[in-house]
Image 1: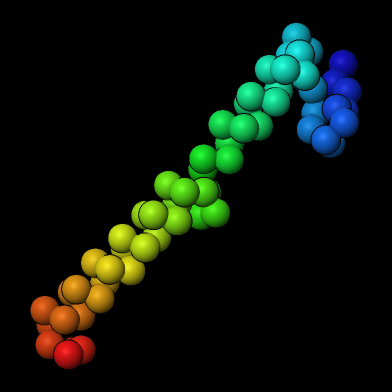
Image 2 (image 1 turned 180 degrees about the vertical axis):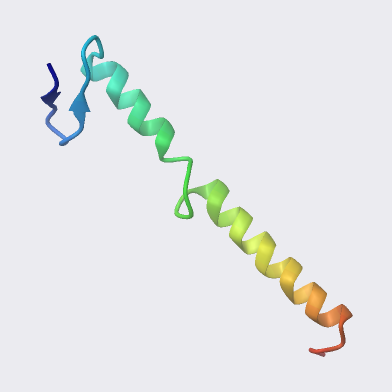
Length: 59
């Protein structure tokens, strides 16, 4: 049976609140709002602008 923890996450059978806390922390490193996702987004913007520059579409 699943139960709901204090932060609203479902606790699956056999998972302690401590395990769920570390699991939720590891998920913060994924997605566009994470440092890795934000860095990837900024690098892709830079590459796009560089390609536009090489195509002589921007100064």
